[in-house]
Image (spheres, helix red, strand yellow):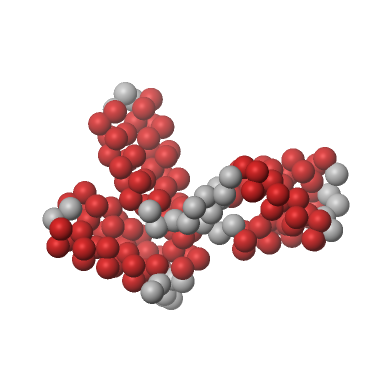
Length: 149
């Protein structure tokens, strides 16, 4: 069963159970997926759906930060609840140690020597860590390691 099929099934389950909060978030996920499918005129695979879900989580983290600055704890709590539902569809996130090990392995495998090789390294890491790591943090780690060479 594809990830999209699982999300649709979860929507049906939430409808039957009367879980309005979960249903709202699942519908938001499906709407985001559908919007991209309409824009690109092609059906998204699991990897692309994971990217959409990661983006949604990042947007909610940014919103929480803004709500906390504005002292709107009520809105911050809603965003936090949405993150919990969205993260339920994401694979387990890699730890900092696992990311560091992956970066070192890819640098060795690609024989990267300088920051000029960053694109080559990041390309392989994106394929391995899709949806399981914040690529901004991974990029910073790669840059740090390549500058140390």
